[in-house]
Image (tube, rainbow, N blue to C red; front, side, top):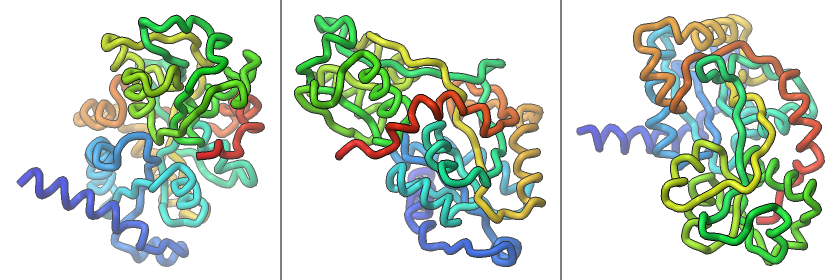
Length: 288
């Protein structure tokens, strides 16, 4: 029975892009809200991770909340811009891309980990590798994640550039869609090094990975509302998300989103200004 339920959830997220979101009147009359997530993990895993949250929001709003997983990071950004989703979860680089032309996207809150509200990534290689610094990557194969990922593509590219390493200096590079693919490719020796978030490095560290360079600390992932979402709905979503940690079932919901999450705190677009300076010149996609 549980397997059937999971299959139905996956079918649901495949069908969601067909649901139009066009106006506030439509929003008020529709039976559901659409919640978007970028595909930083396999879609079935993301549906499983965010279902406790959407079920909680559905119960409080009296309106079904459905999950839409983007086919890639660009698709997720376009879905927010074009109103295919009502609100969304996204990483810092995607926020910067989303707000490049307009700041008219209301933050609803961002993740906090026992008071720590920033995170970092690493450039990794195999433990037995003789690669000890970024300069050792000349002539090597490098694995990036999705071209629009903060910690698996944009910040690693910035770190390489700051070390004097261009893409032309590499023997080659690939975009492998998500952090886990990068870690596994490096472990298997298909690539000499790659970029991942700290959480993924810790997961595979004991299997033979090490960090040769850490990224700066950056603000955490956040929730935003689409343009045109009613202020009533924005206030309701913000309140539910930012007060979630006070609810009896909050631990399961928050930990499901990301291990170690203890609260969703207020967020401001201005908090991402330093990251914007670092990666704005790099927001043209890496060639896939």
